[in-house]
Length: 329
Ligand code: SF4
Image (cartoon, rainbow, N blue to C red; front, side, top):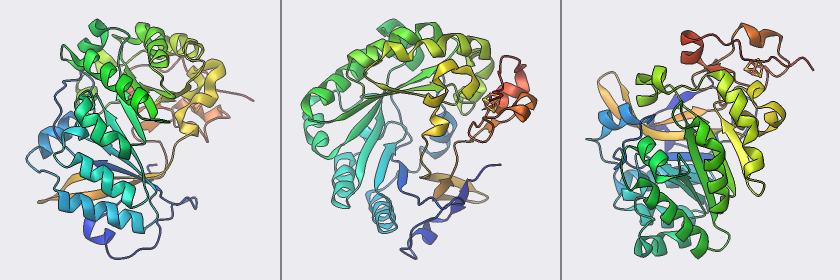
């Protein structure tokens, strides 16, 4: 069962009491979609449909400021800026400044579009604590094929190097999405991320949303290949924290504790949503990392079922899940 609930934007500004989740957790993390535009054409883009739908609706500065102030008043202490490509929002630096003024930790998910430019990075980095750079291969050949644009690899690696070298204690993180077409390159991708100074490396399974859903039959990595490759990668980044997102815990071998299911924070995602007859900038409340994930028959006897969210629903509908290895301890 999903624990997501929705609250209208008008509802957000009526009161300043903290949001408390079903298990008593306080909502402290805001994910804010700043744009519905991206210069890349990632083959697996989970946002593709939302970008097509909401591109005509710009996210104005007034709306952003209201969301940040309201959430800070209700106990949110960290904001992650996302999109589309969030750094191309015309008020991106002002968003960072206001978030810091409100006492928030700031992070951005980016493919380096603007942070590759030293002039822009010099203005942003004093107000930016972390960036999750999208690097989907160890070479330009592999990454650019995944990102759908020549030059993307050079851009994102340049942006990450600059940020890590110019902001003391910067949280330089890497997100890499695995598909059938780059999974064999993953050990080298992780080694590259480590060499670039990534403190955290998130290995994300292809999510069946947007292009990821349209092309799932071509992109999804068979479970037996995930089980073969994923346990080999943490040793390629001994100085980084490695997390696996959207992966059944039993495919991680000795690295089950690296599953993001165990290290996931409740979050409110604020973005355009379409209700019948109306488009509203709306908060989606997520209290568990179970989006599009299901348990299958094999999970019923598994001792990890309570903490593992299982396999993507579309995978279970399309292929067998015989490679799952229920835990018996
Ligand atoms: S058998 Fe199911 S619940 Fe158990 S670890 Fe695997 S996917 Fe998760």
